[in-house]
Amino acid sequence: MKVSYFADTDSLYIDLSEKSCAESVEMSEGVVLDYDAVGALVGIDIDNASRKVQLSELVLNRIPGKVRSVAA
Image (cartoon, rainbow, N blue to C red; front, side, top):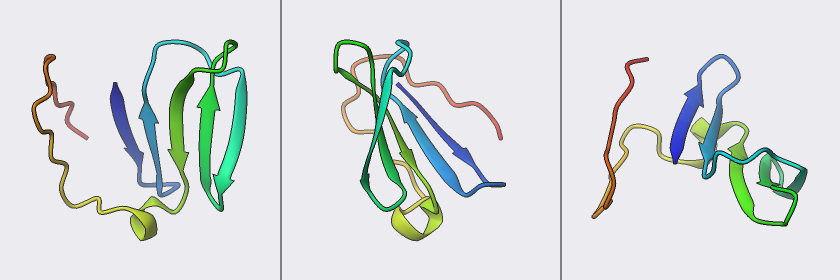
């Protein structure tokens, strides 16, 4: 899983899978869910993210895998 914030567009993308998006569905204004060819959720796109989610802190709780940070 990868979480990326793009300040120039104020969008947040949560990449849940390595699979490609085959279909996108806008669930609410500016919140789009991406699905692969078999209907599995592969990503979440949030426009105007700074107004919809708290970007000042990311808390990872009991993540069993490797946690890696990439500098902005």
